[in-house]
Image (cartoon, protein in one colour):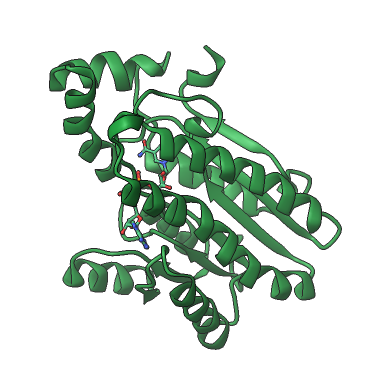
Amino acid sequence: MILEGKVALVTGSTSGIGLAIARAFAAEGASLMINGFGDTQEIERVKSELGAVHDGADMSDPAAIERMMRRCADELGGPDILVNNAGIQHVAPIDSFPPEKWDAIIAINLSAVFHTTRHALPAMKAKGWGRVINTASAHSLVASPNKSAYVAAKHGVAGFTKTAALEVAREGVTVNCISPGYVWTTLVENQIPDTMKARGLTREQVMNDVLLAAQPTKQFVTPEQVAALAVFLCRDEAASITGTNISMDGGWTAA
Ligand code: NAD
């Protein structure tokens, strides 16, 4: 139970990678604030499973983020651990990419990381201990066609992570990103029809020639693998890991 006494806030933790991270933190004894959208009954079930508080702040709304951060401080006394994980995707060529989708992806995948972090750092610095973990992506290092906003946002997250790490390096606070390759979640499943359309491929071709083809292991990364790395980054033994972008992508970016 290495996280007993710690408060963790995981954005976008009602499904996929964020939910796996929340579960792994709860198993290590952390008190949790979860965030994200979804079916009310399912959110209630996850809340009682994890003993968590849920805040439904929309990560594209800086005022809602500020309220969530204040609530996390008032109700739980945290966060000591902030995981910026909420994210969305849209797949389309640049010349037909809807500008409102661009704005939403930049707001949720990138600007929200700035807003949560700026509210979280003062208390972490005062305590002399903190962990900020940003779920970036292999797309923070390499591009794919038709994902301009996502690739731009994730490259931004990697740059922000380095800068934040330098600013708090002497205060006991580490800031890192984890960059998974393809993980089988709703986010990936939902991009298949648009990828089929943008590239003129069948569903099977997208699965085999786009998604699995990117990863030399020919396997999807699992949410639990990402969660185990997030737990490791919270250990005291990880205190010297900061400002890094750790790939967990089945060899994708090595290829
Ligand atoms: P997912 O769709 O299962 O989970 C996304 C989570 O974000 C959900 O809880 C959803 O409710 C929440 N969310 C979406 N919009 C939100 C908003 N405006 N405000 C608050 N919460 C919001 O997808 P996932 O694959 O688990 O994605 C999690 C993170 O992992 C994202 O940042 C994504 O970019 C990143 N990622 C995913 C993959 C992959 O292959 N699945 C690979 C690399 C990185």
